[in-house]
Image (tube, rainbow, N blue to C red; front, side, top):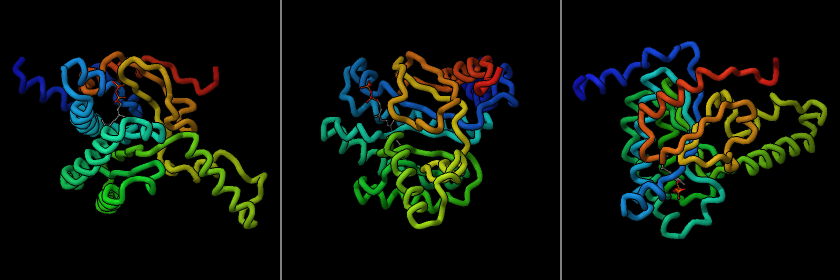
Length: 251
Ligand code: FPP
C-alpha cells in the first residue's frame, strides 16, 4: 500500500470500528511532552511544540471519524508551579496556535470553547481566546474544548458558590439542588460528559481533570508519549473502548 493510500484509508473510520459504538465525547490528558523531548535530546519546550501537532491531528481524526466532541487538558491550575520560562513558553504557544489556526477552525466548522479560570491568563491570550470563541460559536461541527488554567476541584467550588449565591438571593431553594442544576453551573454546562478519557505516558491519575464529568468515563492509558500519539494509537484506544461493557453502576 502506498503512503497516499494509507493516508486516505486513515481519513475514514477503520472498518473494524462500529460507528454506533463510538464515544460521542473524548477527553485527553496529553502527558509526556517533556520526556519525549528529553529522549530526542531537545529542550522540554520542543515536546510541547510537537504536542500541538499531535493535538491538531487528533482533532481532525475525531472529525473524520464522526466523534462529536474533544476536550484537551492544556494547562492545569497546578501547572503554574513549573519553571517560569516553561509557563511563559506555553502561554505564548497557546496564543500563537490560536491565532494561526483560527481561520482553519472556522473553515473546518470547529466550535472552540475554553474551560478554566481564564481571568488569570495573560490578557493577550484572553483576547485571542475571546476572538476564537466568538468566531466559531455558530459552527456546528466538532466541539473542541480546551481546558486552560483548569482544575476540577476549583470548578466544583465555583459552581457551589454560584448556587449558594442564588440560594442567598432566594432564587433557589436548597432542596431543589440536584445533579441537573449542579451541572448547569459547571464550565462544561451543555456538553455531554466524556465517554472516554485517554491519558498518555503511562500515568494512572486523573490529575484534577473533569472530576464531576468523568464519574462514568472509560479510562484508557497508554505508555506512548503524547507527541507520538497518532491515528493508529487512537484507533487502538477506540478498539479497546468498543470492547468495554458500560454499565453505569447497573448489572
Ligand atoms: C504535559 O506534558 C503537557 C502539558 C502540560 C502541556 C500540553 C499542551 C499542549 C500539547 C499544547 C496545546 C495547545 C493548544 C493551543 C490547545 P509534560 O510537560 O508534563 O511532560 P512530562 O510528563 O514528560 O514532563
